Amino acid sequence: MEKKSDMQKTIYDNAKTHFLGNFPDSLPIEQAYVHIGMYLGWVIETGLYSEYFEEEAAGQIFRFKRKEISCTILSEIWAGYLGYELFSREGNMFPYYYYGG
Image (cartoon, rainbow, N blue to C red):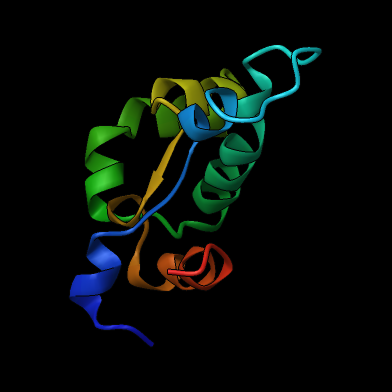
């Protein structure tokens, strides 16, 4: 496993890289946020988020758990961003290796 300092610099995914890249014209921009939102939703449901994310997104986490906002909306609120600081140490293990940290 890489050093913690290397992981702290990691941005795993960003919706902008999808819709500014080779994104199908037939799809609405919101689709670039779906997979990121699904992952954020899973992280929330399993409690694998960081204290930072809990502090910054307390209201959003609460609303997501109550099914008041969708995973796509959650992703849009966070600008389609997935980065190291959003996840607990355990929560970082999968995305770090999946995205090729």
